[in-house]
Length: 279
Image 1: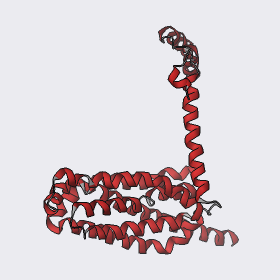
Image 2: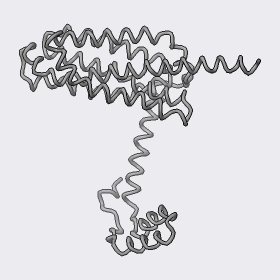
Image 3: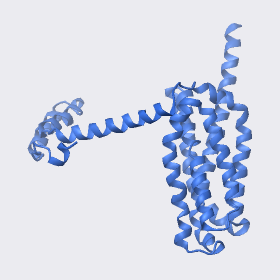
Image 4: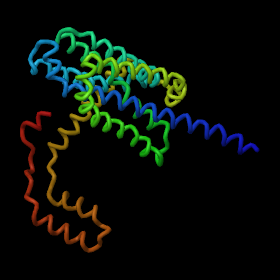
């Protein structure tokens, strides 16, 4: 009887987790859909905003560049204040800013809205991936990640054609309104799962100064590794030994491969250049 009562909550938790995974995948699809629906409607935007296609085309990097840069900030921020707070705030910002984008009357206003939307939306998908990594065991993680990466690919695949097909009928403003409204509906649907997302990882103590110092140490360590690698000569025999050791399961074939590589590889320079020694 006790085992049955313990199995029931576990199965209920698994069902809630799977339902949340589907919602996160749909959320990922919408974000990537709106990112890729813009490029095909650039000629329409240039006519509507009375500007050149080159100027209208700048709204694409205006979204993607801030999106990529902001992902470096939301991860450490979520570790400090909680994944659920950052993810839900990012989804709310994405939804509201997407609707506000429809109010743009000039290409400058549209560009500013796209920059703000890129900053606001970039905390959703990376934290969804982090949530999957922390809640799914290793043997089940591939399937869960497949849902999210499949949603990314689906958003890219359907964003461009559907954006071009729907824009003549509902207008470019209608596209952004529909995407923003879909984000609000998803935000309401995800609200009951807030505690599940919050329980995935407890916030870590620390300040923004600790985050900045952590990034500084990471980049300095990477630069130091590159300099040390460039300043130390690598003999061909070491490369051949590494290749041969990776093929030891092939028995005598590994010895033949090592002999062949020693005879084929050119001799590398034994001194680093002055440029790398300055590191």
